[in-house]
Image 1: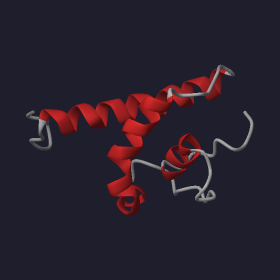
Image 2: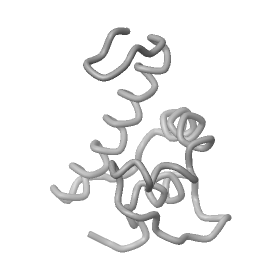
Image 3: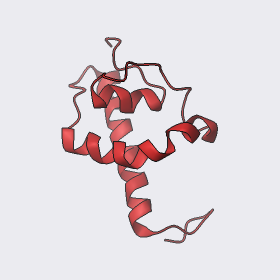
Image 4: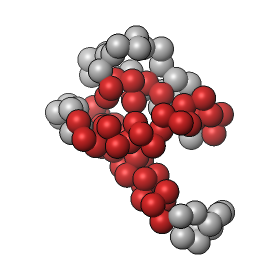
Length: 91
């Protein structure tokens, strides 16, 4: 895929877009008082994309600082935490 700033593999581009839409789906649910639960399979897929990048995500400037959560927190909570969102706090 030829992007404005880079050339990336189609699979990587789709993973990035899926991750972005997933995180913003939660944002919209939180903002509107809707059901915030994301499908487990989707959370697993996005986590698989994010996990190798966890240490560098905050440095990209695309996300707020990670929220500290327990290692045994539900995967959705951990996923949102690495993007600076605290799913433990009620809306």
